[in-house]
Image (cartoon, rainbow, N blue to C red; front, side, top):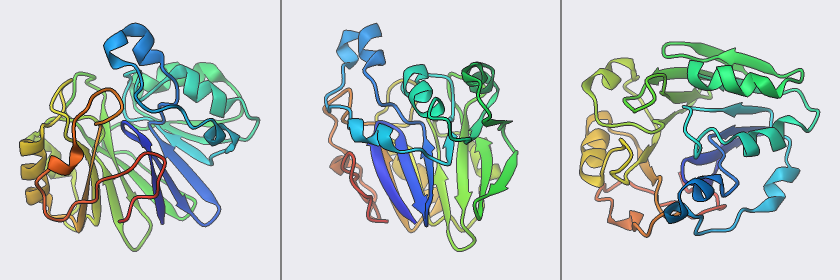
Length: 224
């Protein structure tokens, strides 16, 4: 499994010839709404040459479900799997096409490409927000999505998470670095990847004080 950080909360999982994108934000639309949140890293336009096999959206905020980014991928003519909770599902289907738009609310599982995707609780300002567990039969990768530390989340999680990808920026109803560390100490992953920093702000993710961490570099493979 190869995992690349796309900036903010965006990830690309690749196994064999299968590519799955999660929350790709490849525009500057948030910056147009709020100039304080202009991108600090240019969009890597070559990413739009890819035709992913699936896209997962965790919630309906513009740095996670960006209609402009979504349209560029969904208009390629390739049929894709789209997993999205209610708040996004209602919007993303407007792109049409022969894509498989799957309503992916909490506790829902979908198996395809030799992977099992499971939606788990996230505690965020979008009440439909989810986290996602990707299980390739050998390892479980947990993408929390935007979330605060909430006890109910742990009820949804397996005990053998290999890697977790989580926000540490501490604003916008996300965990700060202290609570993200507590979160990781609770679930005990082999590796924790801090995210949601650096694109709109100058937060240094190296300050995330969890011993088993892998700090990502935008558009680079994450060493997990």
